[in-house]
Length: 184
Image 1 (cartoon, rainbow, N blue to C red):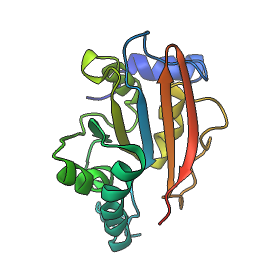
Image 2 (cartoon, rainbow, N blue to C red):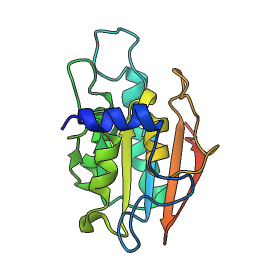
Image 3 (cartoon, rainbow, N blue to C red):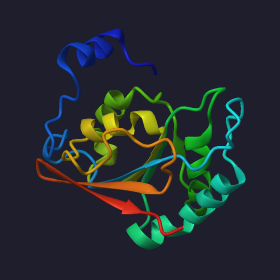
């Protein structure tokens, strides 16, 4: 599902997210309780290779044990849509999905974070915990659209940063966030 031209124009004209920092984008009683937003694991360095590197695959395997132990069992998983240029977000969550018997929803392109936020307002996600693997260039906009307070995520995600997780929690009409560095 591609972002509409209207959504793109709104971002250009109005300059960014519709959700004020620190406010939940979800009406009271809807939306998840907690989300982990992370970049996909390491790539190979070959621009033509859409897959994870060996180090990235190893990180994905470690995440499959780390996430449930550290945060509890996720209820749902989202990955930025795979393309011929990159399947890394999906591959990052694949070991976790396999270990927990979960499906990975990858219907949204990188820039479709507004549509993802809209989806998360559906009753199926209310009060639940999810993990989102995305591409670094659009993670700041995704965090902003989710209402993460300013300063709780990098404004420009560094090209070489693979270990940072943004935990966003929602309570009533508020959103809080914190940075967590993976220990591996």
